[in-house]
Length: 201
Image 1 (cartoon, rainbow, N blue to C red):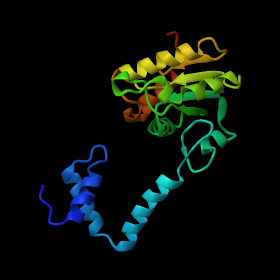
Image 2 (cartoon, helix red, strand yellow):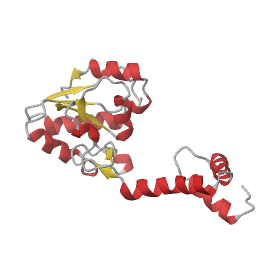
Image 3 (cartoon, one colour):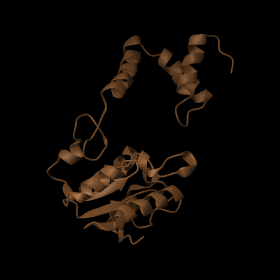
């Protein structure tokens, strides 16, 4: 792609680094921003800068938050004895959109994937074990994507928790194998949580 401006080319190259954004889409986005007034572009860039500089992670569940403890963990309307284990914040958002889950979450920050060099120590699993060891958690729901990496992670977590006094369940396979939580429709996801089954390894 030939550019008439090095500044334009640099901006397009930065946008093209985003997942799912190719050169043509990046160019369209950059040209759109160029057509906006200065205040709107500054608000856009300022929001991204503040996001990177000010975002925090909940000390309880590791979900993205504006404060030390996220709104879900801080709410006295949530059942703190029921914890849903998810891969990342997108899965929290997907489950919250079903309005069917009243417990709290634990965000792993990924899935075990030896091919990608991601092992158990790279994930937020030790913190999960610590939470369960307090005795305040009665059930953990393993709500991970139905993929090889998801199943591997579920099995590893089960091995870490199976001797602790906690019920371990997994969402029903309304989610097809190979499917990811964030892309499941709300009804299927809600039913998968409601009809969860005990996990026995």
